[in-house]
Amino acid sequence: MARICVFCGSRPGDRPEFAEAAELLGIYLAESGHTLVYGGGSTGIMGILADAILQNSGKVIGVIPQHLARPELMHSGVADMRITIDMHERKAMMHSLADAYIALPGGYGTLEELFEAVTWAQLEIHTREVAVLNVCGLFNGLVTMLDEMTEQGFLSPDCRRHLKVFSATAQLLEWVAALATTR
Image 1 (tube, one colour):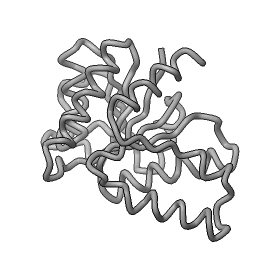
Image 2 (cartoon, one colour):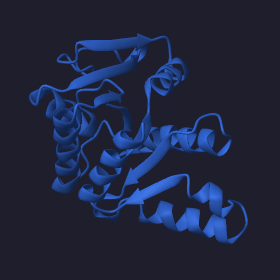
Image 3 (tube, rainbow, N blue to C red):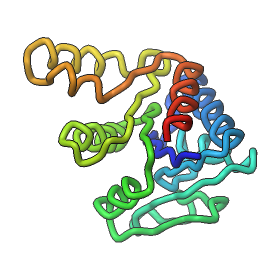
């Protein structure tokens, strides 16, 4: 089974579909025997995802920097919680643990982590798959921007293909299932 690194928000967003997508992904990962690697938080989409996996007897590895390792932020139910010196060490550890990457709804941090993973794929630092779940069209602007960057010659079509975009949770789950068979 795979270790799936999920980048997602520490806030829940304002639509119930965001939480529903995180919960469905969590249930699927747990039931399929995959391990979640994530930012270690208990709030927002992060907390919803971790809770769904833990409630279904799944495996979770949390990776959180010292300055965020506080009771009100860190998920107390995650037995394998790794505390790092800073965000750089956190991302390096998450990358070392990951077999694939998924971005769920989130903010700046989610985008920063997503872009590092896809940039490293472009630079051939890794060969892992990277995907975005575009819940309620949250990432439509991003997809348009990437397509425009490709059209304007800043991304090659091969580089653009490094980032898969799924608009439905079911599509993403099929992609994860296919990853597990190719490992």
